[in-house]
Image 1 (cartoon, rainbow, N blue to C red):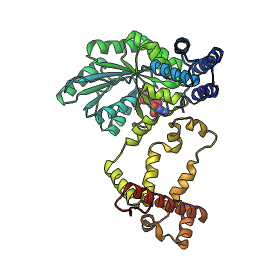
Image 2: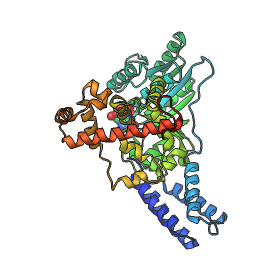
Image 3: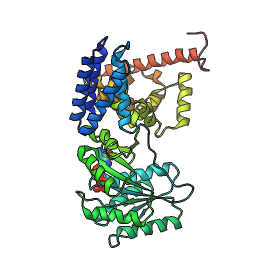
Image 4: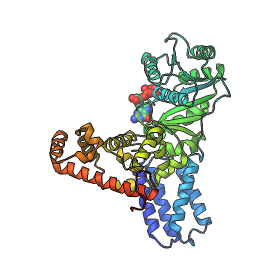
Length: 443
Ligand code: GDP
């Protein structure tokens, strides 16, 4: 996972700070030196690091940190706030033209950065916001690019405008916008050509599009795995053609994180979204504060909540709530909940976003996702009747279930017992809450 190493180092620095009752100036200086090293090792731009440490230092001295009752916490708070500032403080939304006026977005970036994938991801996001996007295939140099865009567009249910590879990109862009106007599309996303390295031709092509087409926003896609190269690329694109924002891809990999922390400070342009995987749904809005919390090991509960709301079915949730109140929760519901957790990336991923270094502690006590699949296998090996009414699971049924799931019968016993206890607790709980199905006063 991105930032693991940086996060671990910073948390160690903080642990030392928290452990001290009073801090001397030398303590703070040592801590900041360690923060500096950690940031440099995470490949954060050295100028950015220098300024960052300077700001923290100034505030730490100016704010009576030394005489505070919790000086360690004060320093951590300042580091956190400065880190949020570094990444732009506020979330920047992509803006659209009012009403049905067409918003033109030009996507650019080096080959392999993830531009085509991100273009389709973004189209999906716009669609879910009620927009009518059209993708335009302006990369005429890589025949596979047009096809790739079409495949991804199909998956997102977003049409792709193409004129093959015999026309100039600027003309394709113009034609795409005309097509959009005639067919009621209100966002046109231009997928332009990338090259392996920055070269004059590529830049000129982008400039030509920008000069001849009313591009509302130019968005640069950069690969976070390339670290400071990504930052240099962003700076060059911004200087040559002018960009409005950046999408940072592959943040799901084990990138050290330097690009995420440097881009805004170096280019002055915000990170709009981050790519968190190859799937078309793996694009997350960028929140500087959440990202800082994640890096500092303070968790990212809000992203977790957002994730939980993907595919969130309100009716289902209500039904479940009713069942819990009536203590009618059965193995079918249990299974459904487990699948929901899996959708959110599994227990390991969820815990990593929890605050208080819970994720950090995880490294020592690795979560056994296999144990969960064991539980799942047991439930799958139950009949429908058994899942709906666990009371009927007698010893001979347990034996059959264990055999089917390929586990020892003691595992089945354990699960059934835990489940019964859970139901008992729910009953008591719903009693306390005055649930209809429970007898009042029993608790
Ligand atoms: P382009 O040449 O810039 O258009 O890049 P592509 O869209 O073809 O992407 C290059 C590769 O990166 C593909 O294998 C994508 O699946 C992959 N990719 C793109 N975004 C992400 C991301 O956020 N995470 C991961 N893990 N892979 C990504």
